[in-house]
Length: 269
Ligand code: 8IG
Image 1 (cartoon, rainbow, N blue to C red):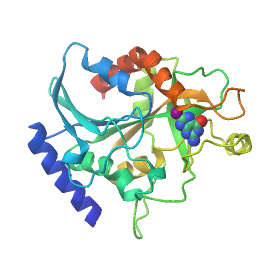
Image 2: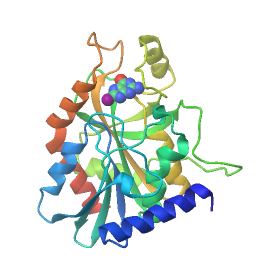
Image 3: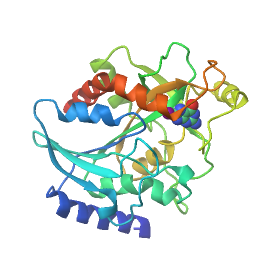
Image 4: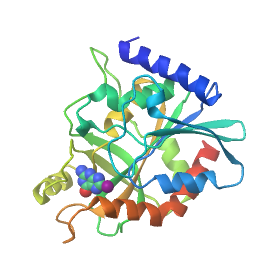
């Protein structure tokens, strides 16, 4: 076990103590615009909040940096299932290192989670995706030039984004599209020329998160579901300039649909 995995083990032990929940089953990492969806989920019948803590209560977590992200972790119970929700994430562009980016994933694995749902807000290249459209991630291209895995540990990333879980999502909502997600380092958005490159290499979703977390989740043996919320058309696809505020608005307007989707999926996993 690496020092990073050891620190995640310690965080999971503190988490169990603070939440009073010994074992979590499913982890959910929220991206830009997804918080209202989880609030909608907690309002549904049969769901109760076990506890909510600050990430900084746990070893290895730093403070949250982005508007619309709160540095908190919510434990939600539904029947005999416990859901561990990270209401924010550490982004690669914060410069805290890849280990900090994937610490929540490793903590979730150490807390017992065998499934992780990674969500994000992102730019979309398909003109039919209006802001607020959720899209399933079918595969990714990691343009950070980094890996969360250290040493000669060669992890297979075939079917990284679980075909079973994607199928399940499409049973719940047959209108869901699937696409390849491309992670740029950020924090700047892309140039139109870079979006042209994304199209050429087969990507249709662009963002600044998720791929490193998915790799760490696979290393930990978790089944991974990735869902992007397209909050803006990618640079050069439309004339509109890109603003963080439209991300938040897209989340608010899509909350009920995404909350319903999440609760149906979590119920069936
Ligand atoms: I929200 O258009 C959101 N995040 N890289 N590009 C990148 N990240 C994003 C975008 C986008 N929109």
